[in-house]
Length: 353
Image 1 (cartoon, rainbow, N blue to C red):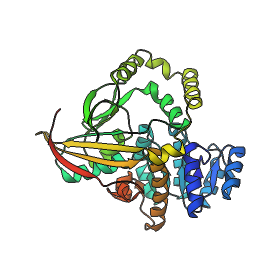
Image 2 (tube, rainbow, N blue to C red; image 1 turned 90 degrees about the vertical axis):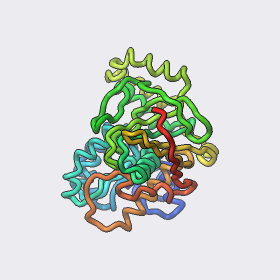
Image 3 (spheres, one colour; image 1 turned 90 degrees about the horizontal axis):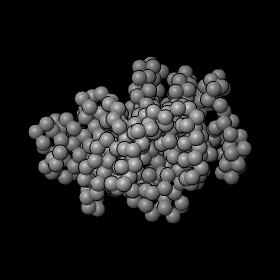
């Protein structure tokens, strides 16, 4: 079941599945959008509300599992995960939201008892960076610090914009000594060479702050993206009003406005954009290894990664239950199996931190 099939990313996945003959049940709460998409792709559909637990569980039992694409996942993941556990069906989603990864990790025992995998973040959030982190850990087992980042892709989807607006009031996050630590927006900057020369980069609360700890056991994790000095200043000014951003009416206004002002990448951008992923691990003694990886546009990668994950689950033995990161469930070089993705390149270097 593909839930949230009519959103930007859900529709990308549905169209590709129809092209390749992948059987999917399209689902979501908006009947008109579902029937339009299902009719165009000649796929079955089901109108479902997440609040209708009984119908959700019964529908999941008709399917091999779910790929959940309806965000913000901080509001939609819990009922879907609980329904999957009750129906004994695997759960995949495309979130990058830290609280969803923590929720799935907290439900590890229940998923294990049900014999099903819970694997959120099976898209650009967090497949490339999660695989880079796991490969780096294998290359430097004594690493105590992990830094990740990526550069590429200018346009985001309405769903991504809505999720970003919904989380602005939460501030930033890093992992410190194994614990999630809330930090101000624009907390830290550094110079990073993502693959085309050094750029100023700033910390963001990317999903790897949660997942990389479970994939690698490294207790100190930060994630960076390129940003101009002006962008960093604007991020830091938002800290002055951040408590207001989490108030219900303000948050909903920001979500709706953000979604209305975005359209997602065009077909040309999906095909032409390249993303540079970077990672670094260091020991306490400043021994460091960096890694680089080039991928297609993040939404194109999400489409292909989600479809590949469903295919892999079809062929994996039943009964593998619990919470997994993508690199744990499908292997640390899973990302390299996706169309248009290069290989993870390792480089030894001296720490600049």
